[in-house]
Image (cartoon, rainbow, N blue to C red):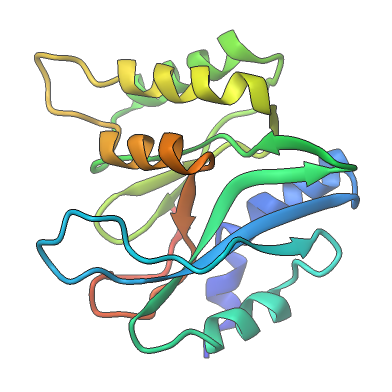
Length: 194
């Protein structure tokens, strides 16, 4: 079972910050997925989209979901959030490795250019790389442009910093997803604040 200390450092805290800012009428989405065999490029099979209300999204809820995972399954939170029937997205990003301060400043500028949000990305160490979450929501119509701006952060003459395949999967699915578990040998650790 996942310890309380690990969950205190877990991305679940981003959802709690969003709820504190936006209210308890939010419905978050997530899924379970089967980890693909090494070397496979296809997207991992995923459960139907699952929903959880903001009031249910607690450490106990997360512990139970993690305990339900099968031996080849992981859990991912989705960017898609509903509020009274209106769709929003959590701005999130999957980095290729560990970006420097300049890239993170550019990322904050990207979000500021698309929204009126004035917070900063929060980074979580996922084992081999970093995941980033912005602790607020952006309207659905801004989200595709946000993903496009993420790709522009990958400069042609430097190693990529944004996982472009992750962006591609997000565009195909209609939502982004980041892992919240560490249930299989493919991953090194449960995501925790960096």
